[in-house]
Length: 594
Image (cartoon, rainbow, N blue to C red; front, side, top):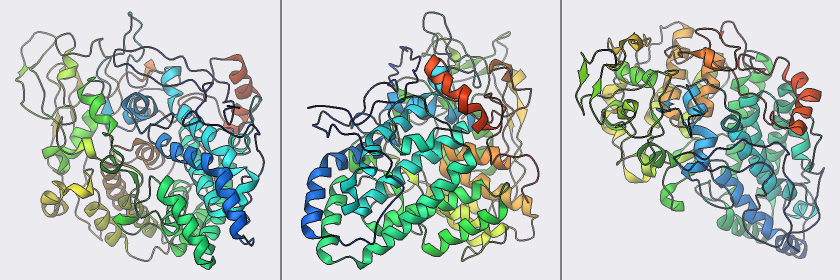
């Protein structure tokens, strides 16, 4: 009997057929990671319990491995889903565009969509903050694929005979859940983890979700730590499973997965520093004590070289012309003389002419030039009908095609530790040490291929003051603006705490490119890096005023009566505010960072 593991969350996407062949699935679709015979029983309610001290026999292990092999295959699918894969496939441009590039890549200030996705004149994305239900539900669709492919495994009674695999499955679920609650402010976390199949779903408060995830991470850490006490035959069996199904660690080891759990805990601690400083300190110091990622060999990533795919941004930028450099990122890189300014982005592909009177012409291939976020875009994905397409793209050769898609990068952990030092936390090092190490390990290009970045590094780290820079838009000089970057790169122990924090977050932001979720989190919670104000914020849901930053994505499933019912009965209360773009998520509070 063929049966999907779950029926999905009953919120529909309003998906549109775009010129770029955008293709993302509705949450009502089934995502099983392949056409396989699955257990028709739906298991639920056991995910949080990991009995890692139980005695396990060779016979019990063998039986569990036999019954769960199909679920381990789905766990592989989950790893692809975390970075824009679906149906057992590796990350692809269609899905990646919905999960990252149309929405959060632009909110974070990295990139801009250069056209309005007009399909028959409807203009589905008129400007950066314009709200489109189908696009904004994209990240949540990826989370549902994670849930649909992992929930049965982590609730299955046989998984208790291989508790380390249950721990890893729960870690993957919680990693995705943390990403989602940061974007939306509330999700039905408990119901999804317990493998509930159908509405009504109850949305949970973000503070409670964070506490539950960290509690899970502590259990996961203890389970994976206990693995060292297992007999050799057991270790060999688990190692065999990881060798076949682990696609994101580099050494396929339980020790590395343990470091990922603790690094995620450190990330979450830093998110909450302004709302629960004492608990944030506790979480962070516990994570460091138990062991976080400390070398590039311990990073978690999907590697195009190893898995046989191309970084999706390459196709989105160069085949479809659907993304261009953000002017804020241009200005930041130029002001700090960052290496990416020299080799990561193309110069304008065609001449850019002043739209008012043609008096100012930027010849083709003149400079790296981004687009102001919020500019109202015209239809068309070719430069002959839409001049905005001529603005700087990611280079069509070089670093990006083989750039990894990171789940946890060493540089992120190092910048988190640097920030922790500013708060006086025990991070086992100094802010300067972690800051400088973070810059050294920040390259976007694949570490296996050498590094253009390293050639510029010494000069970059010596930059004490930013270069005076003005963004100029030859097509419309009303968009011109002076750089807002007033800090340098070189560490100065005498700087005020706020300046040190701005340096840390600014370098973390650059190092994280193109992973926009964490960049947007930092921008919202700290105000850094300083970016240009987004234009035409009134194109959003009506809640934003001039100069505002969009604070969250609206709760998913609003366009169906079933989904809207859950939002009405529990979503708004769990969110703690109106379901609008200007409502701040739990850890995003106004006020000083110290």
